Amino acid sequence: MHCEGMGSPTVIFDAGLGDWSTHWTAVQNLLKSDTRVCSYDRAGYGWSDPGPRPRDSQRIVTELHSLLEKAEIAPPYLLVGHSFGGLNMRLFASTFTGEVSGLVLVEASHPESLPYQRDDDGKTPATSQPNQMMVVYPTEPEVLHVPPEAESAINDSLLQTKSRMTSRGEYRALGSSVLELQHAQSFGDLPLTVLSRGKREWPYGSEGDLKEKRWHSQQMEMVKLSSLGHFIVAENSGHHIHLDQPELVAGVVRDMLTEERRESASVLRGMALP
Image (cartoon, rainbow, N blue to C red; front, side):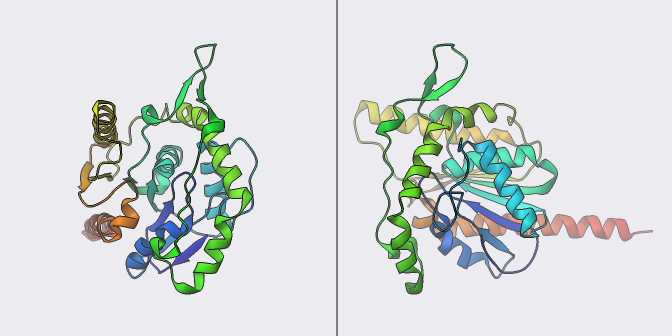
């Protein structure tokens, strides 16, 4: 876990499936003067040792919470999750409700968008054709906005068999991760912002049009998870908004920090009145 800055709440970043902590470098650099910001590699990625199977969201959330405790990083936490990391952060916010002050979902996976199908028993989701899963690893460190001194370490991590195996393990466990989210249907009045891409990702044509429409509809649906939900379209971004427009992601987090601190100060003033 790599933490910078000081202040509360602590911002915690979780990357997408196949991605790692350095994907958050640009956003983290923009926010480290505002509060403490922490990015980490899930077990099996980057500089982290492999973890036990299955690699489902519940295990990942439990491991993250244990890591925060061991590192003596106390709540409250402002959670930021991209793609599959958004699925994890939704479960974290649902599991440790009293420790979370806000949630930012960056092109987060919607349970209904994940590639799984029902097993023969009709009850348990199972990923479809997991052996055909392929994760694309960017090989140019400058794409990740990392300092030159980190390029060698990042290139080494891209070649690690453990990272590829971890991606496969998380993919295989997507069905379980979806089931684990069934009880996380509402966050009440938890501050929530959903960031969705503005650039098209699916090929042009009737099938691509349908997938684009469904994706954006599912993104907007997640705003309903909170009575304080907001929806923002990153017009100049593809799926990796934090790489295409890091200043936008940082701005959303900063606005949430500012509002929370304003409310906390107001409560304290009210308590001080006779």
